Amino acid sequence: MITYDDALKKVLESCIGLHKANISILDSLNCILAEDIISEDNIPVNDNSAMDGYAVMSADLAGADKASPVALKKYDYDIPAGEPGKFEIKKGGCIKIMTGAPVPAGCDCVVKKEDVLIRENEILFFKEHDIFENIRHKGEDIKEGDTVFKEGRLIDSAVIGVMASLGIKDVLVCKPPVAGIISTGNELVEINENLVFGMVRDSNSYSLASQLKEAGAGYIRYGIIKDNKTDLKKAIKKATSECDMVLISGGVSVGDYDYIKEILGESGAREIFWGVKQKPGKPLAFYKHDEIPIFGLPGNPVSVMVCFELYVRPLIKKMMGYQDLFRKTINAKALEQFRHEPGRTEFVRVKIKKDEEGSYLAGITGEQGSGILTSMALADGIAQIEENKNEITIGENLKVYLLRNDL
Image (cartoon, rainbow, N blue to C red; front, side):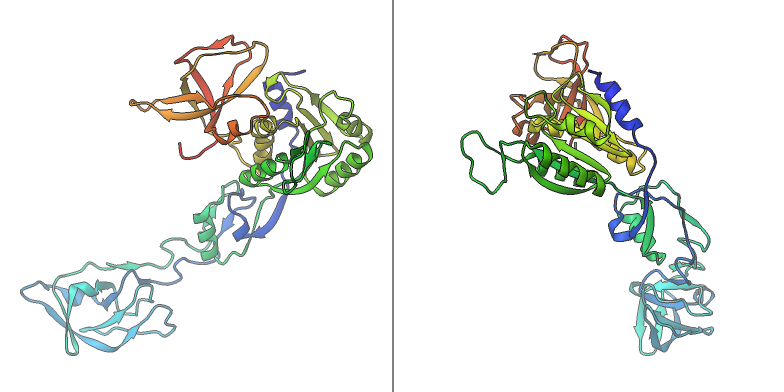
């Protein structure tokens, strides 16, 4: 049995390179760019008006003030946004222009419509304006040939918007992995079935699917597989042929019906480790089948979710090209005193709040048994207690992995 730190190191070392794929920009949110984005256009493509108003020659407004406004002749047509026609302003004239419309030749500034007075076919201007005032220049945002985003950039909503403005429909990204989810156990029933004595609804495949989705990965649920060696073998073979990683919940203890170790060994999968000195999640196993990572997760629902956070999520982030693989961590002062068994790393579900000075405080979410799934639902974070600790005292600092982004 190995330590948590050694287990995590072995998991992250198993990532053997990034898989890349061209996908729609609408599907690329939170992916990592696998190529530089270089503009083939100027953005904007031409000089255009920054607001609704009147296009003029700034020299024509020399000396204009409230006492002595300048009157310019109004052209009898307007320039709307998207107007393909070309206009030219002559000295002493002005033309109504809309936001985003191309600036006509001869014009070097735009005056806001709120700053003028309309008088028959003339427009009165009450102050001077600087050259290029209220004009957005060709290539002001992006110039043709610019490297707009570098490979390795996280794609957020603004990046998607910029790529759309550049006419980019598909983009090369580090491909998010697809994980196969297998729930094992004779005691499991589907969530729409009534519970009878000794049976448990399958929550693990649902929590894992949602954790995968939140981490940016895809998933395939292979349903409940009973403790039957033939059926388990078929399901694992199918999952390893269709997915980039496999998550198996249950069947990794040492019971008479726990076949996962035997099946993986017979399949040619290579055992990286079996068992970790931690709580919850001691029976965690990790294999590789060719280049497919396989996690043998405990059957208890809290252990499943905690092990996902500790090992699976960081590996997914690495497979997606992220540099920052882990949840945000904080130091929080313990609100309770509780004992800890030395020799294993313990992960405690905690609620987080702040004191008057703005310091974080951590209180446990109640009973911490690995079958009490509500302890995860109530948790804002997971506090890590090092394996050499004997107890945590009130006010002692804890390292907490935040499960929420709004703290």
